[in-house]
Image (cartoon, rainbow, N blue to C red; front, side):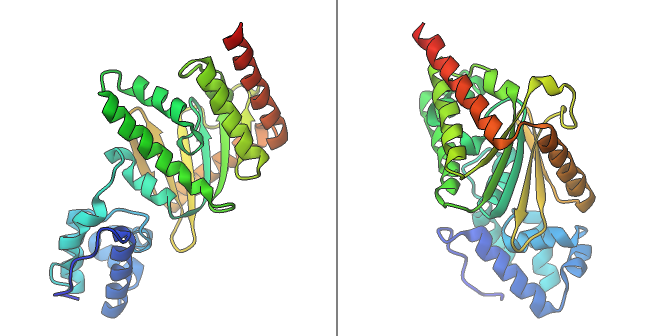
Length: 279
C-alpha cells in the first residue's frame, strides 16, 4: 500500500480510509482483535475504524503504518478523514449517525437535533453561545439542518426518540418557535418516519435521570452509545456499557407514553403554544 495516492477528501474519506485499513489488516493476516492488541485498543474499535464510524487519530495512524507495513499511508490520510464541520466533542457521533441503521435516543431537556426545526436550532445555539456572531450561528444551524437530511430516506435509519416532558415544556425561542417545533415532531411521527414517546412528569424518578444518551447500531460494526453533557460528549464502545445503556433505554420506553398517546400530547402542547401566542 505504500506509495499509493492520497485519498480524495470529497469521496467520504473516513469510509475509504476504513476500507483501506480492512484490506491492509487482512493482507497482513491479523484479526481485528489481534491488531487491536498491538494498538492497545479493542477489536471492536478496529471494526469501527474500518466501518468509518470512528475517527482515526494521528497516533493510531502512525501505529497502523508500523504494524501493517504501509509506509506513511495512514499518517498522510488521517487528516482528511478527521475534517469535520461539527464541534470536536460531537464530530465522531455526527459521523456515526450517518452510517447508523438504528438510532435510539433519550432527550431530557431539549428536542433532539435530528428532529429540530431551523428556528428551534437557532434558539438553542444562541442560548449556548450568547455572544457568537450571527454568521457563526447561521453556520451552526446549517450544520444541524444538514444532519436532519438523514430522515429524507423513508425508512433508514430507524429513529426512536424518548422525549422527557421537560423538553416539550421548556419554552425555547418563544411560543411560535415551540409550536412549529412540536408540530414538526408530530408530522414525522404521523408519517411513520420516527417513533416518538414522551416520558411524562408523573412517572417521577427514572433510570436515566443523569443525562442524555444516543444508542447507534450499524450493519457492519459494533454498536456505540454517545453520552453528552454541557459542551462535552464521548462515544462508548465497551460491550458491557452499551448493553447496560440499551437496557436503560428499554426501561424508559416501557414507562413512557405509547407512541400514539405521545403524539396526541405533543400536538395538544403545540396548540397550547399557538393559543398562548395569540392571546
